[in-house]
Length: 256
Image 1 (cartoon, one colour):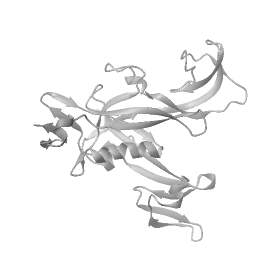
Image 2: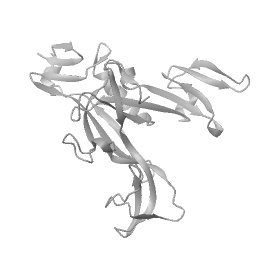
Image 3: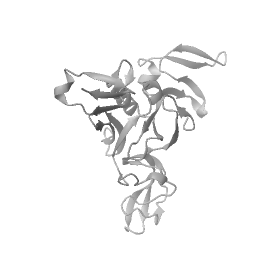
Image 4: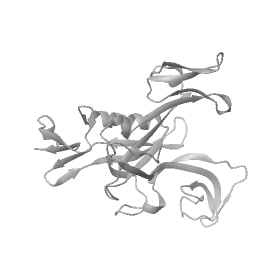
C-alpha cells in the first residue's frame, strides 16, 4: 500500500512513521543497570543513554511497546526544525476523502495463520466456510460477535502531509489499535464539509493545520503503557463557530 499513490493529491507515499517498536529486557553496560531496551530502527538501544552497548537478560523475549514519541524515518529525523523526539505533528490530511485518507480493514485469523474472515469496509465481509472450503459473503457490523470479543482485529493506515518537511510528500502511520482508528476517523468526520475533509483553515495570510498527537495510557490492572494517536482539527475561533461564513476552495476553509 505504501508504494501506491494517494488519490486527489497525485503524490507518492514517501515513507512510514511508527509509534511503537520491539522491546526486550537487557543490561546496559553504559548505565550499569537493567533496562527495557528498545529497537526503534535496526538495533536495540538503551532508552536512557541511547547506546547500543547492551546485553540481553537470560530468557528475555521481545515484545511490542508503545513509545511517547513518533519514530521518524532516518532521512528526515530532526529536519524541518522538528525535534528528534516529538509527540505532536502538524499535518494536512492527504485527501479530501475519509476513505482514502484513513482506509481500514478487519480480519480474523484461525489457527496456523489461516484467514477466517476479512472485511475491507467494515460492512461486507468474506468468511471461510469449512464445509464447502470456500469464502462466502456476509454482513459485517460493530455488533459482530468476533468484533465484540476482539478476535477480529482492525487495521488502519492514516495518510498525511507534514508541511514542516515539504508539501510534496505523503507519509503514513499504520495501526491495529481500534481506539486510534476511531479517534482519527471521528475527527475527520466531524471536521468535514459535505462529506469532504476540511484540510486546513485560512484567515488572511495565516493557516491553521491539523495536530496529530501520541497519548500514552496504562493497561487495566498493570503498569504497562501503550500508545494511541489522537487527531485534532484546525483551530477555529470560538466566536466564529456559530456564524461561520466560509468558502471551500481546494478543501481549505477561508474565514470571511
